[in-house]
Length: 350
Image 1 (cartoon, helix red, strand yellow):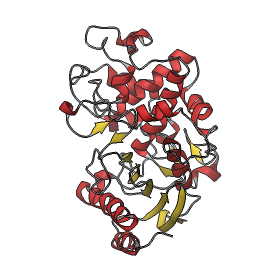
Image 2: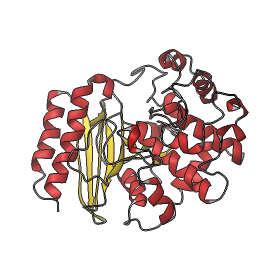
Image 3: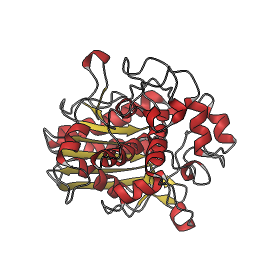
């Protein structure tokens, strides 16, 4: 049992009482053994937070996309050095011809963060391919490989690339290469049309289009897009079960040891600054600066919906926290909440 963690839980409960967040869940695994699973508040009106709730994971979805792409690399379907233009003729021009799969995975492609005026595009309820085309038709932000520029669009392109090279829809690839082998029966990409499933989805307060039929994290449109950068919805136990496959403590293997080592090792040069990126995960510290007390070997990812998951191999410690207040609802308090939980757990465990 986790000891010395009471102030962490008390802090989360205080945020709920003050209305900073509506609900939350926390799981802690040490050396492969679960030491804490805890929930408080409401995930949505009339939906208490609990193990059955499905939380929109936002950018943590990129880890699922990267895992799928790396499974294709293991099978020889893709290589990390492959130019995207070899498969997507839309990229066969002087500016974008140098973009590789590795650039997309490490946010060094130069592609913009997303298409301009995303709210307007979502309001039109465009299909995913049109959303992506509206972004990749824009000029690059920098020459590929020369900078780090966090890009949802780049992960959207990875999904399109995988579809084109295999002839299979990307959600099918995610399911057949990741969700089913890992036994993730409570993870959805896209969200199911079954009302019994949709009624279990947490409401992300403050996200783009919150409360509208076209909301980014709504079940009517946004989560049915299956966007490779932010479309995964999962229960907290399933999130932990998935991320454990990137640690030495999973019951089975989604990827080889060599692939996991490459995925969770810094692949961006130190000259490009922080954060460091592996393939699909942040390494050594968070993009948001939310990891203070973990070791330099830690890796993980945070989602703007209020969810975060990190593993520290130095302490064999896996921490996953889910909540439902978006970064846009208050950046400084958002960052404080995530850091307070991660720091508090790290201190309690060490």
